[in-house]
Image (cartoon, rainbow, N blue to C red; front, top):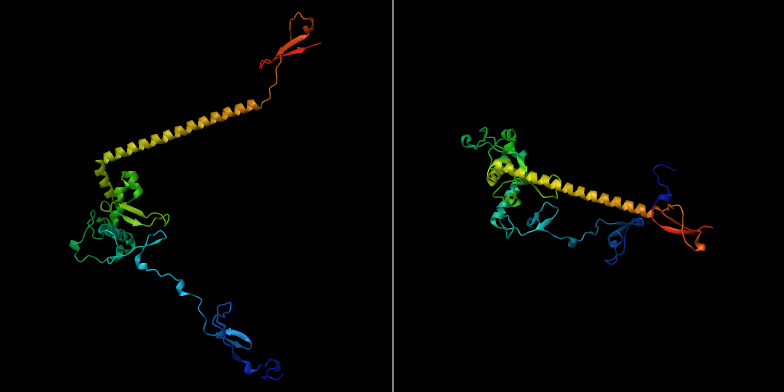
Length: 307
């Protein structure tokens, strides 16, 4: 075989290179969803043309207006009509203000404190209660209205630390309606650290909670006395509960022991412990050999005739 010349068996007829397939009805589709009439054949093999019929039907989509929906942070989106001012239709002004305040408290982060510009007039700038510094903690100032810097916040944790709702209820005996009042207490709302589907965590400023609690109970001493009284009541309830459980356990043990003894007596086979036979005195000559014996345990008495 010479170089540059193809073998005779590998040649093909150029007239059969590309042919159009006769047009078929519009509903004649191949299994892959490609219209056969838009296919071409090359050397006896069918291949699709550049146009492929789309398989997605736009009518299957449902359009939503996300501007009218509210994220509940629980995996659900509720649709509500939003007014021009950004609040839902039918919401009162106070409810809208509380909602905006809650959203603002959730967006405040400690990382954004360094982005604030310094005040234009330093002598008129708000100062820290403790050290008179103008570098205030942004979150404490905007949410709680407390003028304190970060250094003093860490230096006086007994005054500027944050309390959870559970701590406010257990340590200061505040009720749920009192803590839910946004006009009474300001708070920082965060996502629950345990799970995103749980209720959001609310943090309160300690000295504001203490001021209200001391005013509610009269003084700090009265609050301590109330705490001691409730602790004594809680201790008594625990002791009473323990004694009741102990009494029930003793009753159960006695009942089990009695049942066990009765079952042992019932299942035990009685063996008579007979006494010595005693001859029955009788004038009849036929009954001279009649003897009687008695069980010493159960008292059963039988008569025997001894030859």
